[in-house]
Length: 149
Length: 149
Image (cartoon, rainbow over all chains, first blue to last red; front, side, top):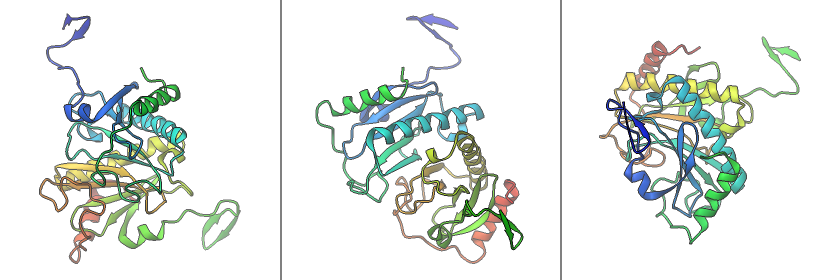
């Protein structure tokens, strides 16, 4: 173990970091105890992602029992907040990961009038960037609903 | 409470039953403590579904905390068995429910050489019925891997 820049590091365990493809298409809303919470820059659907900060996790079954229980608790917490904030018709919750291998769980608010309904969101319609300030506003309301750090 | 045909029924709580659209496109593999486990009749991908036997559940957040923890445990159990049985490249796990409202969780084995890769499976390619006996064989191997009743 050694310390660099105030962080305790281990030579045998490289630090977790967010996959660049996730970082490129989302904004960071904050952290829950297990997961980094991201918001996709796609105004078609309010779309959050939970990324467990566990190095090398690809599948849900790569997490241990306690981590899986915590993942489910955080999925429920984020789902309830997103439903309350958006008054959506349906939540879509999914761990796919065929393109970006780092384990991430999508939590997407859907409406019967949205651009892709009833199809799943992946690849259904081109992403539509939010107007200035709108994604920040969604994340600010999310931060008031759940305790992100 | 009254008894009919050997089952204890309650007049105030109608019995849970599998949604007809799920019943029509799958075979029942058996029950875990919370979920009925189904196998989709689609030879494109080994594709299981977990359906919590809880009346009226549409979203994961319609389950209580203990049921959600049990759902995660059963997702992990079925995922590990499916991965072991198929030697797949990736698991896709999702609760979508835009078409069939009864809460159900897909657990799908994916390969980089499969008919839809890397797209999600829903609506990607037409279902291809299994050859005679193949789906029964998958379910039989599943029953040997996890304790379905």
